[in-house]
Every structure is written in structure tokens, then in C-alpha cells.
Image 1: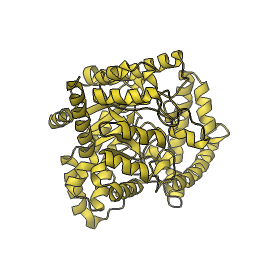
Image 2 (image 1 turned 180 degrees about the vertical axis):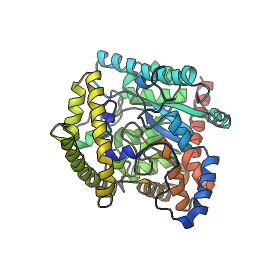
Image 3 (image 1 turned 135 degrees about the horizontal axis):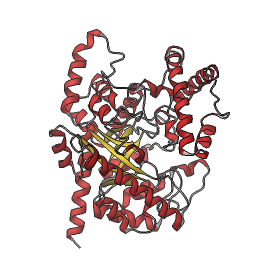
Image 4 (image 1 turned 60 degrees about the horizontal axis):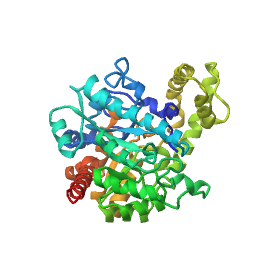
Length: 445
């Protein structure tokens, strides 16, 4: 499943190819200059929007923030270099105990992330990025030449048992929320129940049903990317407004419980919603990703030995556990050395591993887009990265490479109008409909 800060620091080695500069055009020959030029024009004219970018409040301070050249996959310089207009910055809290203490701690974490986004847009860089609450805000801010921040809430756990927090989170700027993440919440079962067949609610809880009604009332899109299939189908049926899957892919092409099968996809389309196809390697092509990661890890291990750096035995799982046991200072020091090893290994991986075991790439992402468009219609499909939460594919490793996605869509024959729908039009249409439903519900009260 997805890793998070500090665990999200253990991004695949291929992420180290990220960086600013010219967008990648790998695989496009000199004879395709016209195609590249056309794609660049489209990329500049449409509004590009990524519905899922994780954050760490430590990167939203006066001393360290998104105006700087951080290692994070999303920063303002990277958005500007890659032509990414809108980043949904995520208020994420991992699933903990369903106790008053657990709820209080989760709420405090959520508020810290809301505050971090407001600090960026109101104090740190208001001249470069602004918070949007509506689709009209998005278009206005982009027209003014600034980048756009929006806020999504991943995991309804911080709601606790206080339904009034739905309104509070909406007033803080949240425009979507999922009812669960990895692990069953008080609101809904998680997709992770598939692994052991253990379920807490059999779908939604009674409280979760109340929260759906409140989200409809206060104009928050319901996100079905992480809950169980049963919870998702029930949420779609109950919602008076369209729903979204903020970062998922097609299960028919990638066998993973985080992906949506055709039954869920058809229900989402019937509801008028949209699935934001996610650039997450192990969701798009699980077997291909596993083969590449095994070969890349072998090279990484060899380089670590050469550099005298000791990797914990047991692979990434052991690293995750080790990092969790460290203090922040210890973790930062270890990660600095680990990054040096990764950087040293990157060239060998590019030369020795990638030609034999190709990494999951932008083409694999657009394969899912093609499948979804064919199954449920282009008006129900969008794009997301899950940057800084484990996402990124070869060619779109960070926000600076966003053009590569547009280029691949042009290569596949999508028109400018269709590309505009896939990048932002469909998602903003859903937001408009959700807010219209909200206005109607409150007008009736």
C-alpha cells in the first residue's frame, strides 16, 4: 500500500531521475517535432490539475517551504517548470485506534495540515499560489498567472464521532474527503480488509452514512479511492451528488484492492462521478513493477556495500519499521546517507536494469486512461499522481515532468478538448455539481 512521510521518503530509486528543466520527450523521434509542438500548445492552454499530492507540515515553514528546491515531488518551481496548474494538497492522517484519544490526535494532525496549506497560500507565497474553493476560483487564479492549491482530506478518521467537523473541514477549505484509508475507520471499511477477510462494518457504518449526508450538505466531494468495494457502492448509492475516486486505477488492468473493478466504475459513471487515474506503479502494473523493483533493489544493495552503508535486512518493510523507531534527527541523518546511495545507484539502474526490466511508465498510465474511457466514457476520467505519497511513473516522476502526460495523450490521438476534460474539466464539473447540490439542500432547510 502507499507509504507516507517519513515512510514516503523511501521512494523508488527511479524517482531520482526527477528534476526541473525541459519536459521529457523520450520515445519521440525528430520527425515528430510537429506532434511535440502541438502537445506543448495544448499543455499551455488547458488547465492541468492533479488531485492528490501529499504534504508534510515541516515543508511549510518560513525556513523550509515549497518556494525552494526541495526533494519533494511537488514544489512551486517544479509546478512552474512542468506546467502543472493545480495541486490538491492532502490533509492525510493514518488510521489509528478508534478511541477518543486516537480521534483527538488525528484531529490535531489534520488541523496542522490545513494550517500548513493556508500558511503557504497566505503568508509564504501568496504572489505565486492561491487557495481555490470553487472552479471559478481555479480559472481566475490560473488566468492571473499563479498556481492553484486545493485541499483534499484523505481518511475521515479525524472526524471522530463529531459530524459537525465535516462542516469545519469544508470551511477550512477541504473540497473532498475519503471515509477510510488503509485500515477500517469508524466510518467505513477499508479496501485492506480484502487481505484477511476481516471487516468492521460490512461497508459503511451508521456514522459513515451520516457523514455522507453532511458532505452533500456542505459541498465536499465524496472520495471512494480507499474504502472497500461494499462501502464504495453504498456511498455511491446514498450520495445525492457525484462522487470521485481521487487516485485509483482500473482493477481489470492492475489486480490490486486499491483499484476499482468494472462494477464500481459503472456505478461511479451512473452517479456522474469521475475516477482520477493514478500514476502509482504497483497499482498500474503490479507484476511489471515488482520485477523492476527486485532488480533495482539488488543494484542498490551492491552500491550500499561498496559505499559502506548498511541497509537493514528484510527489504523495504524492514526499512519502514526501522524509520518508525527513529527520532526525527536520526531519521533525517539516515535518509541523507540513503539518498547518497540511491543517487550513486541511479546511473547503474538506468543502464543495467531498465533495458531488461522496464519501469512502469507514462504509457502504462495512459493504458489505464484508455481502458477507462472505453468502459465508462471520457467525461468520467481524470488524472492524478499521488506524488509524495508513493506515486510517480517513469516520465512523470515529479511535477516538473507533467508535460509528458499531455504528450502521451496527444500521441494516443486525444483532442485538445478531450485532454482538457481529462486534466481538469471533468473534476471541476463534478465539484460544480456537488456545490450545486449543497446549495439546494441548504436552501430547503
